[in-house]
Image (cartoon, rainbow, N blue to C red; front, side, top):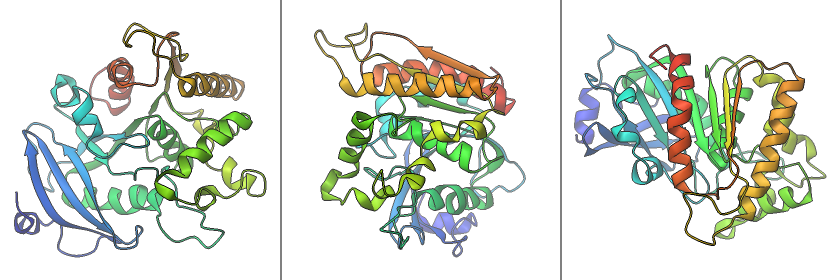
Length: 310
């Protein structure tokens, strides 16, 4: 599909609250890449991959599809889920619009602090406002949504669910960075990710001491009360060599995230959450074979929340 076809479908006839589709590429059966120019990202054009349901027609405003957002991790991109898992072949997703947006190499699903000045990149605004409205106006997305993500994207899934009440009906985090303020090791590790590609790490959320309120506002552990009313799925390995790993491999990162996820699960239960499923499966590193497995394991919960099965 060309960009002119997108305009004929009524999807890019102008800005939609700051977002505009400027090109569309069919990349595989049921898979489209939207090139989206975003005001929240300073006019940058980024990609969003759609895995479309059977019977989906671009520009058809007569039908709204239940939607699963899948968020990628740090150092990945919008292609990660289709490149590294079997998501495009899962039969239970043939009645669901799957949205896989670009989140930046290390965007952290946040509107960056930028020393208190705000401005770009504003990934949270792009996803939860610009992209959401764009997809609903021209690409068949309904208001019935769930969200899942891995690592950085697991944090993003829980952040969006907590910070935008009612936007998502359920959320899943696989090996998620869900409590970066757990201890100095966790905080320093995430600052190292913030610094990727030569970035100033303080631009994202500021200093973890001086701007602790900003950090806490992006730490799912500190937002646990806001997550108690929806079904949640948390999964993580313990960083030791597991059944899906090459011999001898271990992961200090996964071990850290395991501690974070256990702390979050405890906080959710203290807050009275009744619909928390945990899969703390022991041996396993920070790697795709586990995330594919956990996607499958969490889908019944996610699809039940969408009302499409499970």
